[in-house]
Amino acid sequence: MRADAQRNRQRLLDVTIELILEAGGEPSRDAIAERAGVGIGTLYRHFPDRQGLLHAVARHALERSISAGEAIAQSKLNGVDALRRYMHAALDNGIGVVNIIHPLLEKRDWPDLRARAAALLKTLVARAAHDGKLGNDVSERDIVFATIRFARPLAIGLPVGQERAIAHRHLDFYIDGLCRPKGGQTGHTRK
Image (tube, rainbow, N blue to C red; front, top):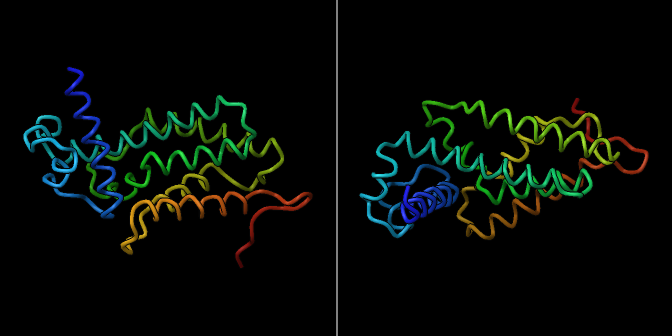
């Protein structure tokens, strides 16, 4: 693919993620093309049908989030800081879009990305637990679902930047709450 075509494709994916997160649902193709600054024909050349676009968007958000997490896992950050940085990166990379469009997708499984994400989360959670800051009762699944919850738009009309700032702030509260006080346990038991 030519460099300009690759840039257009990337821009279309990024813009679609932005619009989905702003609207809390699937945007029109006209809105995508207009925001991306390309003609509607360019959008259709890259993504001839709705499923192709939505699948590419979900995969794009997942790949960016996982790649960011893999880089963070290679860093020298302590376990909780690495986990925190990964969760913030996933928010910034638009991971919330996957949850929003998931019901619209005919094909919902990406075995290659699922395997990478599972390995990444296992590493990050184990590292945080090994450092003694995260309780053994916190699972990879807890982290995945919490990240998805924080990444979903609130749908109350806040400006995107303000909504994103709130999501990051609440994510920090969550992570701080998962951390053990010295000699203590994490979490609350529901009765």
